[in-house]
Length: 329
Image (cartoon, rainbow, N blue to C red; front, side, top):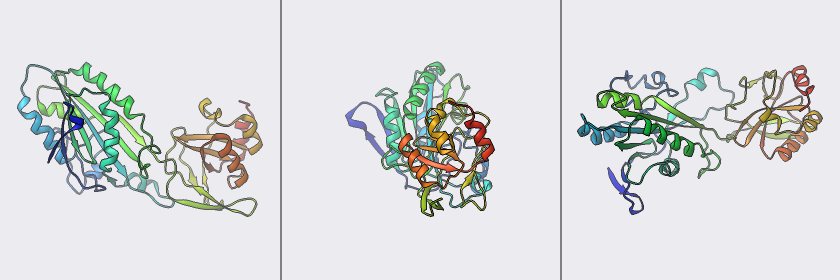
């Protein structure tokens, strides 16, 4: 276990080492929560609602806090956890997507996250780090209202991260979750504090705009076009694309009745009309476009030039597409 000090500042930092890219087997901090067996943990933990921690992080936190209870002054704790989902290749089934294994991130990625976190905390706030898995920050004398303000500042800073701009750019879908708790508001004991800290307060998902996979489709000109297969679930999609046989393995999407204004502004109406397409989802630098002919390489190139984004084409019902294009924007 290493003890480090950042830039000779007064910020207290405790760090433990951890191998990169190991399986994430982190669990809730508190024994109040049901702790699953080792064989069942991935199926039992709800990673959308639970902020887990590694055994090493749990031990660090308990070592630092056990001598602080009972106490007469408030104390707050913020927990940050990072995990990455394994890649899924070639047309995965929904069950496979749900059961993807999680891994720890690299220490360098966690450090880039913590650069943003440090901007929202004081130099003398105690920072505990377990490389690749996450961090915890102890705030003596800070009550629930105070830590809520800190959480908001930390969340804003973490939200500035993008999969494409971290170094190196992320290749895996990455979840960053935050949990907070405060004594005595969270309960009369350390276990109650840890229980509330393990409830997710904020969750961020960084999804690479494109995966390393490429799938080939035949264009209308007979040219083979390499099209990126997006690994992201676009925030604006009403339904995940599904592959339609007989269309060159191009995903098919059921179109919404109405397009959000923030998407329509990405493609001028006259361009959409000319190319017979509509924007249906965006994730960072990747734009999902429903097209009457998603294999048209010239149209794809035009869309890349017009939008400045990576284009992920999907097929759709032409009648539904024409209905959307009948309303000018």
